[in-house]
Length: 353
Image (cartoon, rainbow, N blue to C red; front, side):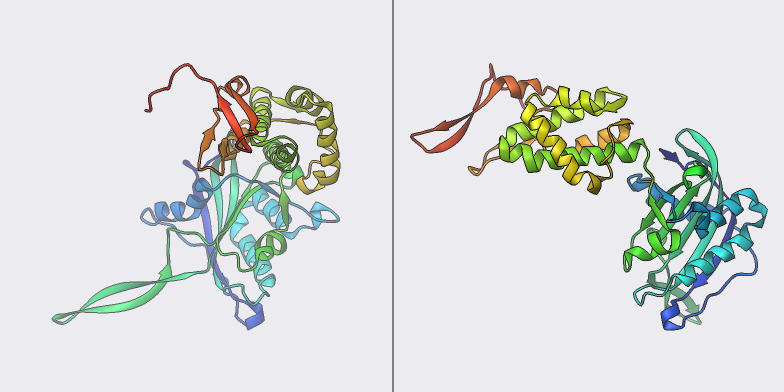
């Protein structure tokens, strides 16, 4: 979890990069930009708003050979070690971004490199590097008095309500390649920002593992449990799975299977499914990991607990009192009507809120 409420911009450098394939130039400012009290809150909101609203999926610098060959990892380390030289390092970062700007779809724009302090991540207060890029220009009107008339002037500028591209590099978990958050609102070339400029991969912490394993379980429920059983059993299987994650601090696969799946044949199907699909979810060799509560809460919100029937009837199952579905809902087949049915037991109807 991050908290940017008390974050301060200690230094800010602003440059401009063009598109190399269109022979557009790079412009490097000679000095840092002096942020006054009037513009500071506007910049902080512009830089940070997208990260507050976005789900926290962390990345880390990576390299096929060795992390020391990742240019951005080295620039970040250099700046963290010597923040007084942040402006010169910001020029290196901007030149590196310019060198990756070869795709014809990549737009030119302003690049902001900020050294940030008092950033909270995972209950640790650290400094960070913010790298932001504005690409899309918005039209706006200015008005000017000209004698006895008011003149309208059309100008272009940056819309401060939306950041086009950005990343926050936290001075945290250096050995793993730092923890990084990144956004890309204008995905003209998805590989340009993440792969070519930053060269990052998903940060495989407990949040990552919990999300990936739950997504794997959800797909197993859809691909295996639903065809073998029915929609009710798919929903109940997912409910038991999420409840296991919610009540445990550590995931242990054998315990999970014994608690969630009663049928030995279905347990075998689960293991085979993991052998076939595990690499897709980065869990092929995973049997134990710490559970991230936030990831479990997010997953629970996304799981559908409604059975939709082709007779325009819906049955909503309560995840909080899941045992009710096991005890009071039965599925059967009516020979006369040649239709399936659900039999629901109850004592009285509850009043709607």
